[in-house]
Length: 187
Image 1: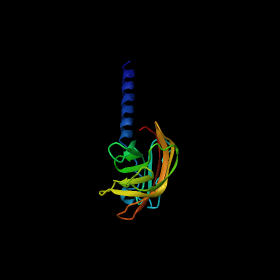
Image 2: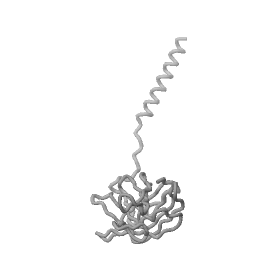
Image 3: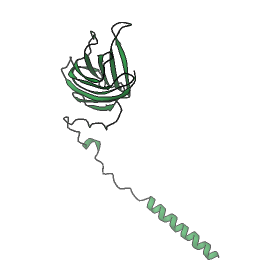
């Protein structure tokens, strides 16, 4: 009996030693490339397209590159004074860094609308305008649309559709192409 107990203790001791030896073995050296030696993507590479989702998206190429889902979005009336609604504004925003706003005629039915320019204080509700604001840099840059298309697939109680436009910064002359989708945004 005493031999049996000693054999069990000896077996347990050997097992503990084997586990400790295995745990003390050196880990293999990492094979990742150090950040200082990593190669940056070439500047002409476009952002990867987002997966097909129902989320509101913003994709930008050109002077700014971004491919993000908006985390703040809404549809709001545009007024020319305190009481008269003359248009509708689609607003998409990602973490206050990438902002898109498109203004279009009030009560616009589903269809395709030409984006003819950027934001103007003289918006009269008859045209469609678009803007992109890049706040990823210290001095925010506003790009005013020079042309493009807004496609509304649903309007009324919820708005869905897509947009694409080119836009230019008046200060630097730099241009971007902005596109994306939006779905089920309630006014």
